Length: 379
Image 1 (cartoon, rainbow, N blue to C red):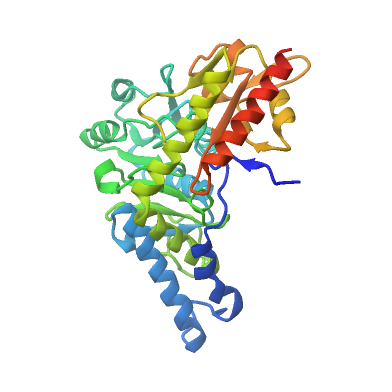
Image 2 (spheres, helix red, strand yellow):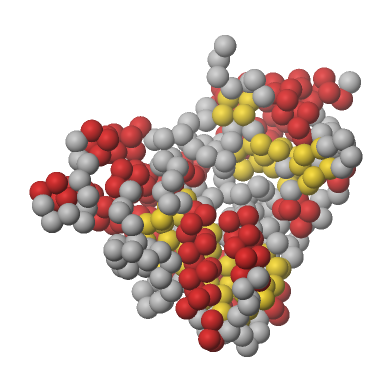
């Protein structure tokens, strides 16, 4: 049996073949500790610094502004907790949105239990944060604003530059979680005007378990992990050389092929949406129609159950659900809830996300499978 068509690239990505080749020497021969002063540490140390330059190249920043982490979740934890710790004396208020990834929302809830207050901003029906709402939420004790660059469920791209202006005008540090946007749309830190930015390797065709945090020069976070002093003494621990090399190569590829990949993913997403729309009634697409990631299709099937559709298509198409229907209740994702999508629509929401490897044949086969499944279940 053929493998299911993979349409869950926002969940994770396959490893790029160039990334695998770049990592290979650090599987096979270059096992040294980059902190070692002897010969075996030379190649690993150079590789880590090369990867730092590659990540910086994608972000448009200086290499010394890049700190390697174990992934996007750690980067978000680091950004919020360490800035909170460093700036505690100056204020204890944080602003975020209701549709952030749990790697931000759960950190904010943790901070609320440790002397901080958090404002969770609403979004409109397309998933957009209103910059005027950000401005209205600012207080004299606000020290950090954290708003994601693009939403992982519906693909809506936030007005980061406008929010950054508000933050700068009030002397507030601004962090964005760019796990979903990097490699799909431009995300240069100077154009976004952010002070901190989180990177997740496995959304970029790099391995799981590696990421990065951009920290603008001059920003002084509290030490996140104490130890021997790696990563500018901010995040200690022997470097994960193998995966750092993979992340660096993935960032180099993302920068090199950004326009090409953007166009391809958008064409495949549009082909999918067009195919579904032409064959089915009572469906709606979620998220902003223009300000959205090129690869993300969030689609709701009226009065249907997302998990039933996934069960029907699971052997042929890999996707994810925006709601889970149980015997006594419907559990709608916090994103759709914040967007005020009615339960009759939200309960039947699936997310399909295209990637570099998605082909037109994949999309046509997926449309056929999804349409057949929906029509069968409706009968």
